Length: 270
Image (cartoon, rainbow, N blue to C red; front, top):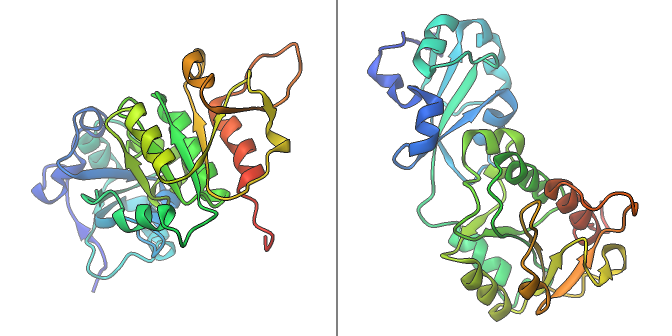
């Protein structure tokens, strides 16, 4: 018996994949789209924090499905490439998409573990006003690579489960727990109440990143490129910088997060 359910673009069973780009902007009623073989592989794996509802693959990529390990209960829809492009509204050159289900609990158990007394060395990445999906995706990729326990964000920062952010994260956004707060002020209050040592990353930081010792719970606070973190906030917090050439004033925020996490997130057993 074939593992594939062969459909065309107007089959109601694949309606969740319709007009992908437009619906990225308005939402999918608790669903999100994962794109590409590597990302879908993460979504269907035990590492994923989210359930997979279905997988859609172009006929020319059917041979790749054995690499994914899709659970037996998950339907796999197969379409001709032209039908897939018509359904989604643009050319899906990777030929593999999946629908995931958002969690309504914001990974409460993972949040509680990161803030409990039993996690004295928890590492958190905090996002303030970061609205670029490439940057958010890159930050989640770094958070996954360097073992961050949690990513928290304010109400302004963009959605890590936006299709492009997930793709840039190479699935990291599907494996690192996250929590969103009503404002940056509420997020910072939560971190401080949970006894995190908040390190605000800025080119004007008073300490060198390489000189910072982990020393218990730590939270790396990242702001948007250009304006960066507000001066009044930097005046109140412990600030760190990544030294660089005097002819250049800043790094991409995603790159900066990777450097900071490589210092704070390193594990002796790695």
